[in-house]
Image (cartoon, rainbow, N blue to C red; front, top):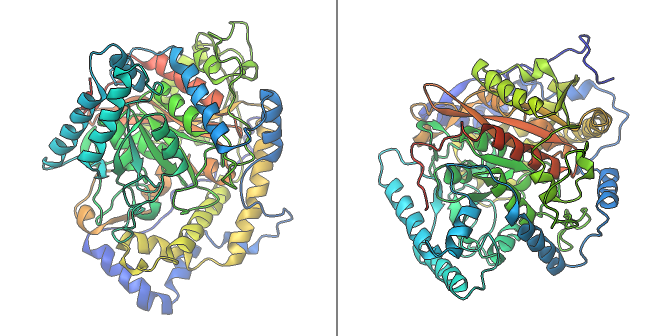
Length: 602
């Protein structure tokens, strides 16, 4: 059914809408909030966008409200041979053991400073966490003084950073470091709790300081990571530029006249600018992968529920996940290993398959291992880079090639190198992409609107955010239910498709990072057509709960803007995605280059 068939119609087209920035955006939003509602304009706009397409459909499938695959979960548990840890403490200990096992994993030479580079420098006494923290603080201060700052960090406290750095320096001096992430700077998206900062979700009015760390942040802190503050994000995560007039807009370190992408744009920019090798993001509609691709770094959107979201804002409860952004594939693996895994205290993550710790002292997989399923540990999988034999990469060519030519060319060149290492390309077809996109957009808008409507000062949201959420007011409960019925259909489609392939490859985005237009920084920016192209390869992973990773594969000249390629795997198979990210970094390591504004910590 899924082999390439010319009868399968590729049906994705950009979503048409007005492009607005500056004062006009505020005026149009205000008009639609008042007279526009009475005139029924929101219903017309929603209909034109295709959101009402579901209303005439008879759907026999039951709805799926959380896209977690129980059968795949059971299979993953059986393959691992490891039961889920019985307590939060046991889960954290298992993750720490997993991280420790990755210390010996092979890493290509890189111009980017990684977590392991810092860890090794600390142990060699060539620098200390205090010195690195001072460098981070100086880099943030220097950036803030520029006419066009990158502006990755939203809030940060020098005393807080230095206190953590001194504690880490003392541990290294005593030989009692907590592991390879001890003393490593980590930035956190303004969507996850991190003491002592408030969690604002990119708004100007949510100001209550966190009383406890989000689970992902807590695990990083317990491993000795230095939390350097909160990063800028798109307000409530409702768009993919990271344009935020209220809290400030992060700029692309590769070209400050362009957006970073969002909504985890500040986290991606912090990594790309060299402030930290690891950052925490969240992804409900590409919010990790889009900015990671736009800024030339690595980003992982995990399986729904793989990483606990407790302590993060419930912006998009069925499509949103917490995940890491890394300077290198190894940074991505280290951070994933630490923050992933079951959490008995989180209803969305308590029944996950355990993060595998079996055979972690294994140096590498043998060259005659012809399937990734034989790799029983993350370390073994990430190290098996000499051969990709047995890995079946699915490609839907009309989908893959529907992007800017420079993006398609870079992704094809990277793919050719993986084929040279033994990977096999399998032509596939994916029907009804337009329908799945509509269902994802209607789902995420409904969920974010449900959250926003509970806020006491939602009228203070920016014009671009309010305009986006106005679309949700034209959706009904029936629209939402039918979207979840289509989700059931889509998950069944992918179960069958993944019998023929191990991953699906696409560009990460169909366009390069957009240019910052006049009026956007002060009043906001709205471009639905551009957003739909940025999210063109993104929505499947969020809507169906599948894991996906973006890897940097090149740059567009003369702008120097980065290009990303995405691998999307089956539920719970992040191991293979990390292995492919590592392999891609190895084959392209000589071509990667830091941003012109990169601040080297050592």
